[in-house]
Length: 456
Image 1 (cartoon, rainbow, N blue to C red):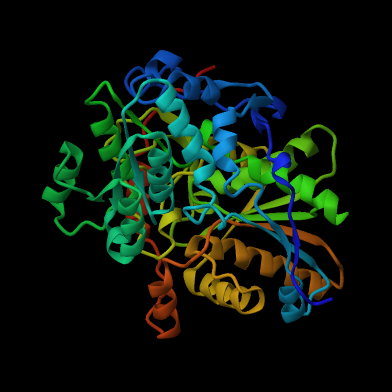
Image 2: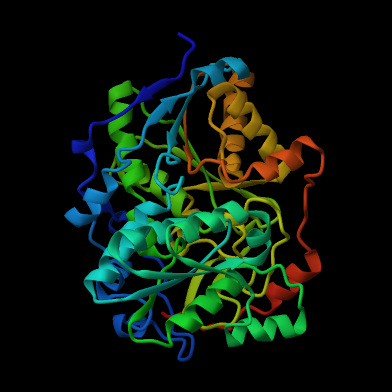
């Protein structure tokens, strides 16, 4: 049989809990520090930005956290998402590997991001919040929060990184269709944005800058909170519905992954697919090799330093210990805008330090080539971010071919590329180029990391 095989659970198999890997770690993640005192923060320090339920999830060490029924009710629109056996891709690559992909592009916004957007909107609504402020890179997160805000009747304001705002007008239109307001960042609407534009009027923006603008605005009104689409523990937690479903689907397939691959920018979709499997491993289950694939133009895991750093450019956020390129680092304007973040999730960074995961990086031309190969075999056009996972999976499959062994490979196809066709047009026209970051700028950003006496 050469056709793609789909494994779909019935909606009764939507997970009832989120999985928290903090409960199974051999060593806890280093504490989050207050930006002023440089001491570990408490729940009250985060209260201006997040509702208490999300704060409690952020610091929780409980293995399972119940998913509220109103959230599961919304999940039912697209969950459980399908797991596919990519037999046509296997045939195209002439590999003995068994390639599977979990497809998150079936959500209303077309990516994995609604898994946390819906949860965050629910908890904010429950807390009496009227307005949510956020940032977005490629627009996957912004459109997801706009969708979730519409579901729960919340006003949504989004600062979109300027280079992506210009590159991806259809994602911006999707946010506005859902009812959100979308602003190019850096903007003239915030103090931090005006400062940056005064120094460089044509600044392409970065997620660090957009976070600064969003946090600044969120702190100005009592009825307003901030929402983040990646990096933080509670965000990664919400995404674990992906991996939990995949575990059940692999039981249907009578198989189990030897290798798990996912693209990584801030770490949310990576955590979603990998953490439940790693949790089983940590509790004595089968060992899996987990590979994080990042862009060579913004390689926080493979090139960054493991250190305390700010999550934003204006240094308004708490300090977290993570793999970072420096909060002032501005990545070049490659097309995988959702992966253009200077730091990696503290939990993902910690797992790399513990030796539980590995990381690799590829340039965008190789990733688009992989995406086209995948689309021609499987019929789904991946988002530029997801192309990194496709590339990583193909590399693993070709290793199996070279070694003459059959391994089971699972990757997370975190979103479709329907709104990214200009990038594919540029690729086919030969206009898409591999872009390298500025080594001098990276050195300056790393030299500017905050001096922190780590807690005992």
